[in-house]
Amino acid sequence: MAKEIFHVRGMSCAACVRRVEQGLLSLDGVTSASVNLASEKVAVDFDPQTVDLDAIMKRVSGLGYQPVPSGSLSDKDHQKTTLSIGGMSCAACVRRVENALMSVPGVSEVSVNLASSKAQVVHLADPAVLEAVRDKVIQAGYEFLGILGETGEDQLEEARTRDLRDLKVKLWVGGVLTVLIHIGSMPHLFPLVRDIPSTVLLPILLVLATPAVFWVGSRFFVGAFKAARQKTTDMNTLVAVGAFSAYCYSAAVTFVPSVFYEAGIAPHPYFDGAAMIVTLILLGRFLEARAKGRTSTAIRKLMGLKPKTATVLRDGQEVDIPVEMVRKEDLILVRPGERIPTDGIVE
Image 1 (cartoon, helix red, strand yellow):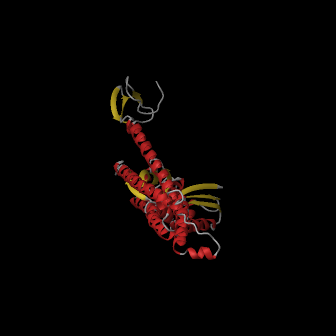
Image 2 (cartoon, helix red, strand yellow):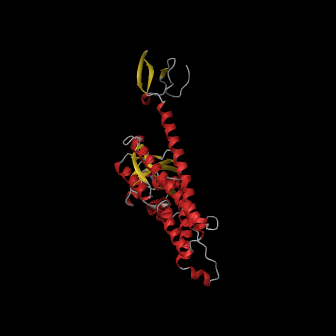
Image 3 (cartoon, rainbow, N blue to C red):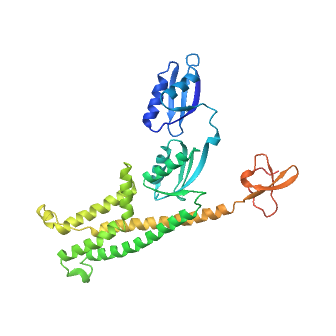
């Protein structure tokens, strides 16, 4: 038996994978066929006395796909690209982005870093693949902030600063509204609202709770909607469902309390709970965003310490070259006080 691994271009979905596998298994002499859509690779076990590699390649071509024989696809056909992605807030977001990017034909490897809001993608050196990656990030419900190297750190920093400013404003508004709603929800503790009838007090609380839930907590509802479009759920879903349920129940208590009395239930509004859920989770998001910003700044400062050049001894001469051009077996000269430019063995 022989085993061959080769690339196949043109596959776009699970149906393509099934078609290629079944098409190869229908050949006499082929005992197994395994297709990896993400890396566009096919592994085939076959009997070389019954079927040869050319017949296998012809079968793939006959199915409407483009086989690339092993050895004809070099490392030059692949490249690594670092993307800046905005809108990620938790591990579920990381998993969703990774799964979305791995589903792009031509992408073989994806690594997403939540703290730095970056994704490293290994893909075929084809502009169409990068365009598909961009579209897939947007379809998944996140912001495509550009390719590192083309946009640098400025765009990511601007997005992070903008998000932090938005969080701070909404946190202050949410905090003030939450305090006012709590005062109105506990008239027995606050003489200022003790004598206000519930028919007047409840509509006031409704007016205060509406921006507290839907404007202050807009990111949770948007995030939940994006997750629902992907047929999944995350922490945004939990917050949105909790706040929206409390708000709707309290609105029903405000406008149709008779329904609860007829059912033998004492109606009680939960506007304070809805506002508190949103404000507290938003406080957590604000603290997290601020911590991530400090971490990213520290990482950038650390990366700034990396030497840009190295002094290499070649043919008895000292040559200053970029660190990226240092080759294996080069002898590097490190003078007193200089930083070591790369890993190595001390001679």
